[in-house]
Structure formats: structure tokens, C-alpha cells
Length: 147
Image (tube, rainbow, N blue to C red; front, top):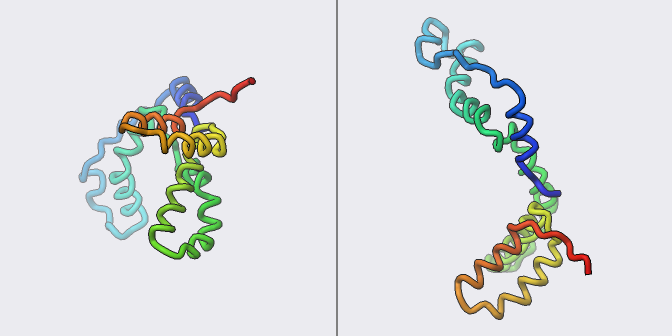
């Protein structure tokens, strides 16, 4: 499935942004035992405040990293299979191959078609610009051909 921040950004722009009128400074926690639950809560809030403000002001940001976790789920489940690479170079090649497949999927492309095209075109690449065009095959969403 393809991930897009457009629906999230549209939803976040329609709802009213809460006003964060809480001044974040050390005076907010004066007199609180730092090891107490409320002291820990205030310290956590102070440390995360900048990220909260960033999240509320930028519709492209996700509330959690569930999307990334789902993207690597199959890799994490099958990670024991990766232990059978005979060499470091083999493990690196396997991880590169897997990265290409996942990146194609995330961008809504058919991994088979992307890899087939890359394997056909890599031997023909003469310049760094040729190689950059191959990168576009992976990161640009392509519509299926109707022929």
C-alpha cells in the first residue's frame, strides 16, 4: 500500500489546533520532587514539548511510527533467515535487495517490475545521471500500463 500524508494533513488542517499556552520552563516544576510521578511527568512534558508543537504544526508528521513498523514487519519476522548469509558481502547484498523491494512497495510500485527494469537497465547505465534515473523507478509512483 502507498503511504500519503495528504489525508492526514487535510484532516489536521480542518480541526482546530489546541493552544499550547503552557510556558515550558523550570519554574513549572519548582518544588516538585524530581523522582515523584508528577515530577517525572513534568520532566517528560518539557523534554517532548518541542516535538508536540512540531507535530501539531506540520500535517505531514505521523502521531506514531506504526507505518514504519508495518513496513519492516516481514523483515523482522524472517530475520533468522538472514543469519544464513555465508559472507558479510552476501548479507549486505541481501539487505540491499530487500530495501529495493520494500521501497518499491511503499511507493506503490510492483517490486517485480521495478527489479526487472533495474536489472535490465543497470548494465546500460553509462553516467551517474543514468543511475539516478533508475532510482526514480523505485521512489516514483507509477501507474500500471494498460497495454
